[in-house]
Image (cartoon, rainbow, N blue to C red):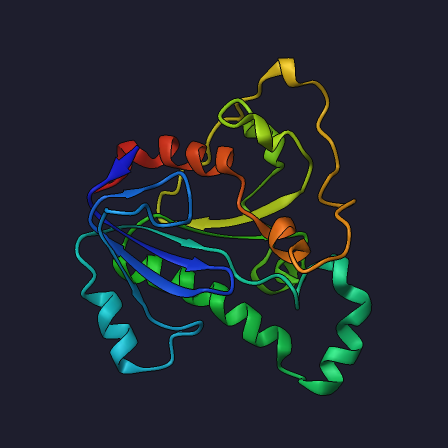
Length: 208
């Protein structure tokens, strides 16, 4: 499942990538041997970065995965302390999402950014869509779990129809029961494979 065009990806904690050439759409990681990645920055704050994006080769889609650490409702009890240390801490988080939206509109391609239930609803308005990973476990049986995720979308983005495997039974709540540890944050924030595949299949017909 590959596309031979450019997608701009705002990945969690990895900066902004321009992916050129053929790449595997169903996972965030670049597939070895296909295309190239140009790292830009966590926030676009220079003319050079904007120029690189404007000159991306035939862009077709923009996807944003802003870090949720400073905005998720699950971490609200720490907001007061964070605000005392940095009054703009949530503005910085929102800027990544806003730039995803701006770039999608600038390039005139479909775009989305996602976050769990968070203060983004107060900043960007009610999300256009919500989903749980289990909604798309028909594409990936490992995704039979709950985690309400919100999507803000634009420029013709098409939300996929849920595709569930009824043989998997009721979804579990592994995200909420994840034990403390160095990999907990990555585990909780991982993008579900089934969702990624569903997004690709739904939007493939309208990509340039």
